[in-house]
Image (cartoon, rainbow, N blue to C red):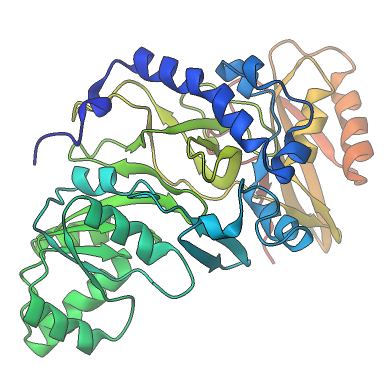
Length: 409
């Protein structure tokens, strides 16, 4: 499998970066036409947002807040410019969170990821993502049809009927969760049905561990992962290099320290924050709640955009301690109060029948009173007492965790 969808995938990274940053002011100006963005961004001057450093000064919008914001200002929380009638489809995802779909081709940007997985014009795609209320089915459907594929809108479940579809229509490709692909293949083998027409797949929406990858590969199917969210579509996609996931064109991705909007150094695990360049449905620093890390360099497949490790867990580590919630942003606030402190990790434990907290803080040259001052800040911010342990820089795990719940019951 060779080739790229277009020349944008292999352009000089500096050229791509200049292009994205040059487009930021217009994107923000477009967003400010929506009342939700005006309230969220405040008195921002669009022309001043022309660098990653300037972008990082803007507040993040947390996906976890969208349900509340949309209830307060239906239908979309005031974050969509223009009337509802301007959109082609309207969806409801669990939460509920409501999403509009633009009327332009491939509005969720899925075609590029499908192409990287070997999907081509003339393929017949069995799409088993749901078409009921949620955008999942339409994300892959629109991308496949933009490439010239025919799509079977199968949706999930109904295994026997799916096997009938495979026998009659002979799809060459599959889109859906990896779990359901295994269910289909197992059912076909058990019933003596032929599913060998399917030779490639794009999977998303569930974990795809190496053991399952090997099993699917052994059955003759080349499967690739897609990182997509219902709010904005495809964020990143796997390629033939099998070396992380390549960030989608027209997406500016940041990795920030959980609970903050502060970008972390390359290679450090943090929360995914996305700015997407869709004037019909702009997102500016949308914090997705997922953890990842940026990989160095370009992909061996020739694509030059940023690579990430893929999904590495959830960033929302809010934990209840002694009946009170402790949040990652509170831990971040404790660290910010003390210039000598670097990274912090709050370990929640159990001693007898009592919850305990230990704040581990990386410090290069600790001042004499730093440990006590950190303990005071921890109590002031969380309203809970806890121990403080000073550790050497680089000694805390690079897993994106700001709060570690180590309790056993």
